[in-house]
Image 1: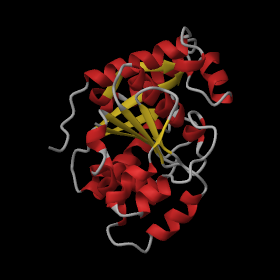
Image 2: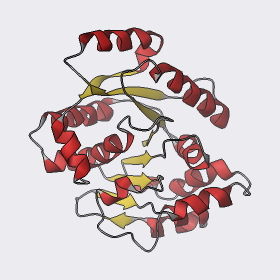
Image 3: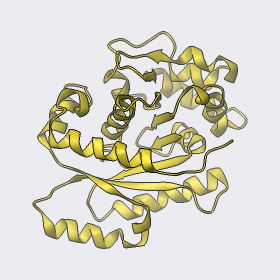
Image 4: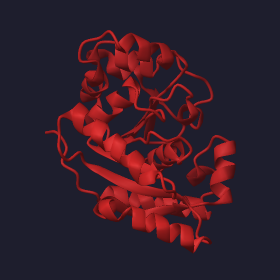
Length: 252
């Protein structure tokens, strides 16, 4: 399954979710590839101390048959990474002149997806060409949302764009509630009401606010690795269990 984690809003736990899902699936013995499309490269730094010679720019811009050359192994068994770097800013500009520019990542991943049970894609917090590539390549969109009145409108903008890019009326997606403050029942009740029209797409798992996740982010480590007995790790472990149970049609 190719799982693209995306939201047009920043600060919703998108990269935190990407790195913990990738680590969690790998720890469950599922061969996993993490593709970092964010030029800020936060996901990359969670697993690699140095930026490799070849990265996501090469994956996207080279011929699809060269895709495997952009993959870098990590210290975590069953997990490989396609790293990000500042080069992706230039890549986004170059893609603007290319034919079928939104499909380049999908074509590259076709050459290597059979080597992995899961491919997890971390997108930038915008609807630019890099995110477009992540959306087109996905079997499933995973949209992290933080409680707040603007959450649903942001989801709609994203799904409308995804439907146009993929020429589909019903793009497969799931919503993950993140940064949920269990102490503020009034806020959570309002958020619950706002999500009524997308309730069938809500994952059962939610990720609560926790100091363990904050500390893991500061240390550039998945909370599953830095504090495996914490509430944050438990939430992401539950999320990975739920993802494993999902049944989403994938290309033959």
